[in-house]
Length: 509
Ligand code: IFM
Image (cartoon, rainbow, N blue to C red; front, top):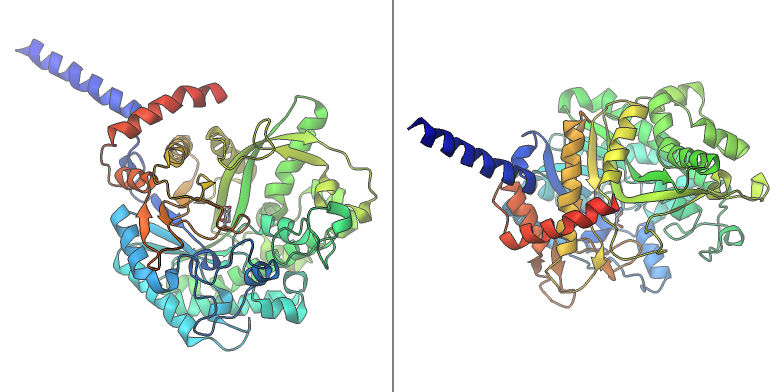
């Protein structure tokens, strides 16, 4: 008899260990770890001219380009379909939805009167989420400053924006803070200032085209404005945090943070030059925003390279910025190699990339590819770097996902593999003691991409833009995510595809 019991135990153990190696379950994560998906207002809402909303700098960029990049007048029309979208989220098993508030829908002039229709929309959306037990994680600025403020005083390059941002945040905390417990002031401010004020690729499309030669900007200064806009964004973020802590936090019991676009950097070669270029790349990518937030000042590398162009904080400002987050949100897509690239331009003529003298590549030998190489170890490295350099504070992965061409193919294997591998690396990091609290896939729906418009997408749901009903069609990735979140065993075909990709991934590592 005991031999039978022993045999049964061994067989059971073998079965368990085989499935433990291959499958990934929601139950591998702590119950309070949250899984979600994200979008942003301009990219998903539509109804751009409806109910009192005025244009943001994103609308104006699209209109200036004659809408070739795609325009957000309709996009996924979440403004009218939010109930349907919340139902999809609930069925999928999401714990949280990350979305942003359109500042110019809520306060059409950027300051002053609140638009009752805007208030009503966000109240409805938040209530619908809560009634389905989905946490709202809300971003206040996702590249969409009201154009009214850009026109009035130049937007983020003017110190006047700090007070207006604080007043806008006050309306949000006051109106929605009884139900919203996670506030993010800015989405990837580091990329926003680089693309908007240095390269001129994104709104407000300011740059010195003589220096960069990428965009043809009619105004701007790539040598100074990225630093100035970043400085004002840090002050605006810190003022909103100070206000939240002073007036709301104790009562509402929520948390506030900022979001940064992160990348994993490693040196292209082991030369001293590439090693120190990699350090400069880290300081620039993370430290530009995170050093002031953690230590109250900019990294030494930035101070040395940018000199007089980098604004400085007064003692009071530095104290206000230091410690101004309860959590950090990171967006992670790329694992890259860094190469030293010295510039011969004089200080006043250089843009920030020339100041820091490095270049990076994230696609191996290719300059660019639509599908992002799957290098999940990069996320693990990055999370560990954050812990080692800045302390083990709470982190949410706010964005991670695979880009594909936008088409009607619903068999998005590459996205399934991407998500599986990155979620696995989050689990490894958690097990190594990194303080990660949540993971959001970018994006819930095929939405209007800020750079590529409707050409590429990251969505779990496909939407045919010619369909008058904009029907949401689940891709394989939506089904995979749902199975994972419900601890359902995976469709065997998915398991086979994942197994097939495993040797490729470990060879690449
Ligand atoms: O769509 C964008 C998002 O708005 C900001 N982070 C990167 C995403 C993918 O390009």
